[in-house]
Amino acid sequence: MTRKAHETLVSDQFGARAAAYVTSPVHAKGEDLDQFAARLRATPAERLLDLGCGGGHVSFHAAPHAGAVVAYDLSDDMLAAVAQEALARGLTNLATRQGAVERLPFPEGAFDVVASRFSAHHWHDFAVGLKEARRVLAPGGRAFFTDSISPGPALLDTYLQTVEMLRDPSHVRSYALAEWSQAVGEAGFRPTAVTLRRLRLEFTSWVTRMATPEAHVAAIRSLQGRMSSEVTRHFDIQPDGSFLLDTMMIEATV
Image 1: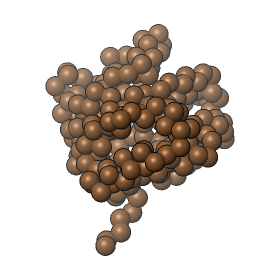
Image 2: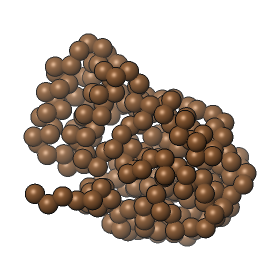
Image 3: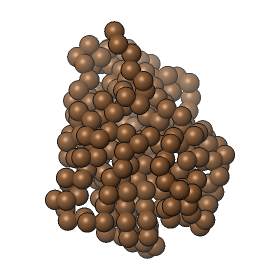
Image 4: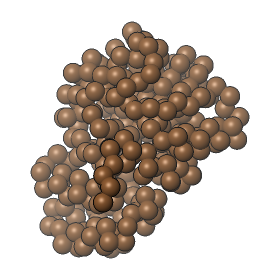
């Protein structure tokens, strides 16, 4: 079996499913996107970087409230889908750029807003990615980090990481809020607000979107059926496999 570098694995996993992420309802809307857009309406951005843009939904929400938006991702296919959708929406201030978050091709202080949504759990080096985000953010700039998070306790954490990895081998880790807070501070950010939410994921679309192999789907369903009541209760696992995912948004300044 040929082994892939992590960045290649991420790019391959998402590039082939670019259109699905552009149109995915769970990615295209949400209270976190509404909150993010409201912050930008109140204080527009001059130049905004969307790290690990995926289907581009942060960029699409930001573009009406920014002078320029850069959608940045590992996958050329994903970026092509984002560019096509931006054109269809008439968002002429949105550009795309390919690369890894750990090696941003931008000078220090190039942006006054950096945002990342449901991307960091795929980063090869979480700490370096955050430090790069800090490096390219200008003094007084703002950052918005949104991601799935581990509930914290080992039992719940082990279950979450296992099903995420079975669904998508490019998954690295859903970090706990305490890990996020520490890493953001060590990268040089000053957190100003944290918003916790729970996101309902419909099982069939969750695995279909990532083209999860049937053997892995069966393994996830087997685990769901055999886990302790503490796990099934916390994640509110339903008979069809749908469940609740813990998420957070950290707002920060420099």
